[in-house]
Image (cartoon, rainbow, N blue to C red; front, top):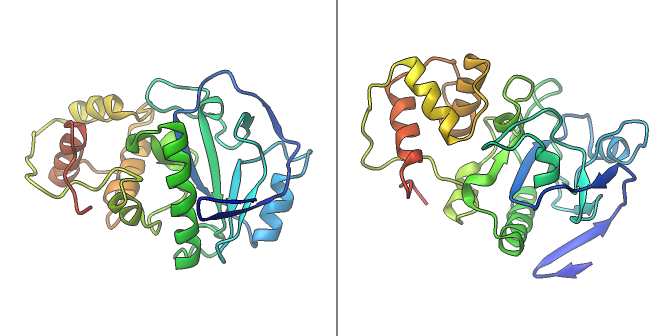
Length: 234
């Protein structure tokens, strides 16, 4: 299928069921397997009980595994902005990359360019806000690290396809760690395990230092994100 600058190859997976919520999110993952073919095979294997709506190869090829009208099985136990059934509320995109355990590496330009076209199309058709275009680590901070610190969120943010990292008029609210966690929860994260939540936030918005420590930079970034219009290098 071709449309809107996108070429999409159908590769149906049997792993889906019915949605119970409207689509309000896009969740980005990396495959974390040795190859794109291995990941595709697993996402289409009935015994694996996992799937995503789309998979984007390193060469930019896009596979559609599950129709957007169905609930794919990509999020697992997760939470974002008061939603616990993320699978029902989201479109899941797997991005081919071996991941942290198998040789994590930068995402090729062709892959990101194709992903950008796909995300832009989904965002427009489903009226998804930038704050709900998120990574697997954002919705499952105790379990997941993907798409990880090498993912070029800034490229998506410049096209208004993700929230930018705030860089302008930053102010330190001097929150305690407990205050920071309350603000982080308000932003959308599950903070039941504080260090995991802090590291997930850092991985997304301050990837050069992921130490689980709340410092002035983290506080300033989070405060800016909670303002109506985060100002960053877009």
